[in-house]
Length: 429
Ligand SMILES: [Zn+2]
Ligand SMILES: [Zn+2]
Image (cartoon, rainbow, N blue to C red; front, side, top):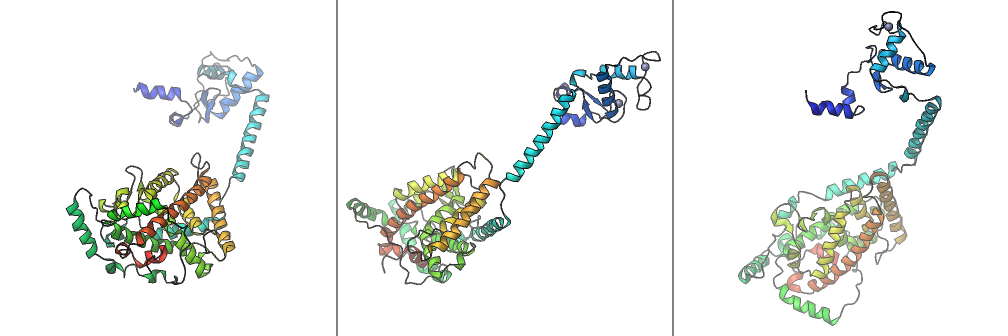
């Protein structure tokens, strides 16, 4: 005997152990239907006990007072049957009065009605909304490779350590050998053939604050060792291509004018890259981990591509905040699509059409959160996601500032790819 097991079945008669209890009537041995008035009995003995108690019946045994009750003879001696009922633990206190029965019935009915009401009020995704989500999921899966296998095709990452000057020198020689010409066929503009040269990049707030001039000139020292620039330029160029591929599959995007498609992509590309990179971002060591150690990017790696903490600190903060939202993949892809279809980008010619598309996507997102995202994660989730879009605007601005600074340096802009120059702007030409 296992004392633990037996005590469990005593403590929890209605739990899992009930299924293991032999379903045999303790009174007559017939098949039992469950616990009735505190004992496992059949329907017949349950009814007999209730009737007897209600009638306050007094029975006398016509035999010797110790009849053995069976399924077949249980009607022969009511006295011994009732005695058996009490012996196995049946209690009249468990019998409900008629009022109680009525109340219980009403309660069950009410609960069923409430359940039906809840079910009918439960927000559901329409068939059309579900279709939009399916298309976006498919678009994302076609354009985001979670194995990061293509990263080996980029110019290799070179991490220079400021302490070892020799290594820095040799690595910068290496990066010069692997000039951007080698990869121009990989990242040619044909991938983005709808980009006419005439489209101007969005206007930037004029810069000219003395301290920023100072910063950029002091960054010149850093610039001479931007060992990660070729690799990260290729990575960004590759990501832009994927963002374009994703955008093209957003329902309605291709119906916009070519000019608006271009403006939307140019303005949102870096924001969507920051959004999608959250998939590889890990809170464990605050890095973007894309497969092997070679493709694990820390803040220090990005500074070696010419970006300063003015961008990287808020960027990492953004990644942490976004990661902590624990978005479903459905929400993640909707957020990227909503970001791309922002009607307020400078230069959009038909903002109302863009707005209608964005509006539809944000309705899908809100419905999705209501229908599929359980609390507490869903609490204020939509508002938090929209706030992330606002954060992306300032990250975008800071990125543009730093990109301009970098692209002013011919020795560094030559490391960029044609697509990067086309999308982020070519300050030299
Ligand atoms: Zn029975
Ligand atoms: Zn009897």
